[in-house]
Image (cartoon, rainbow, N blue to C red; front, side):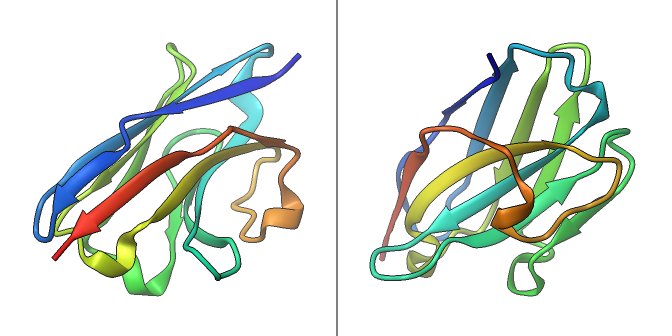
Length: 124
């Protein structure tokens, strides 16, 4: 049974940083694309970033390029999201997602497995 567990969320002031982590278990994730999505109150869930199975290729939402960095540790079955220069608009529940795929799937419908989410709140 595949499980994804996020950690690292919290409250931070604008301009600050947070690092989210997602621990995957239940399968070998070496062939999985791993993604981060977020959902703000009253809004649809949106893609933040996705990293491919090798860890050598990533895709970011245009609005987040340069501030967020996704990475993965294949030995530890973890994927991380480093978030810098956070803004109040980044406040959302952040979700880790996984799918058996060698590409960079961009939509939530592409993903088969989801974590429970971790809250990130950025104060002004």
